[in-house]
Amino acid sequence: GINAEYGKQWYQRRVRGNVKLFIEKMSFVGRILVSRAGQFHQIVRCFSSGMDIPAMMEKFKPMITDKMVHDTGVSANLKLTDSEWTLDLRDDGTIKSGADESADITLDMNNETFLQLIDGSTTTAAAYMSGQLKLEGNIMQAMKLSGLFKSMQSAIKEAS
Image 1 (tube, rainbow, N blue to C red):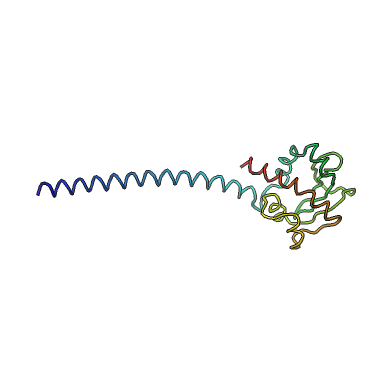
Image 2: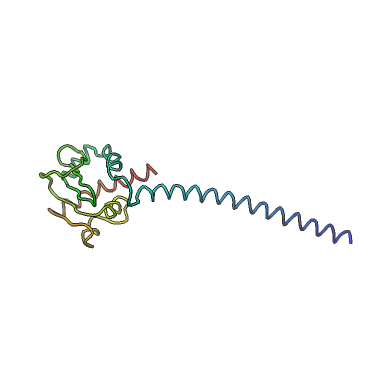
């Protein structure tokens, strides 16, 4: 009788201890997952369709370096769903609102395609081939912008 009772108590303590340890571990894992989910949610929020393209462009302006201007040498108009931008990587190294008539090329796409170019889920070539990106001008000059889009990817990753 006494050994059986002791064994039962020992077993209950052991199970309770394991359950408690399991709950603590799951709680820790849960906190990590919630933290990661929060970071993921920030990125998703940044890339949602209601995002503020002008604020995003402001973040990208400081990334344009003299080397990027020298290597790219292209001025491009971006026609997005609800706005137009000029990426001047030929002369000034600027991003400004509005279209510039003297731009070498015009890239016409919706906001979603632009975000896919920036987040790396598509490339300039793939977007062009699939019809998501319409191009006026030389396609080789459009390909030169991929370096800028990659820089934009890293800026988004650092911001999140």
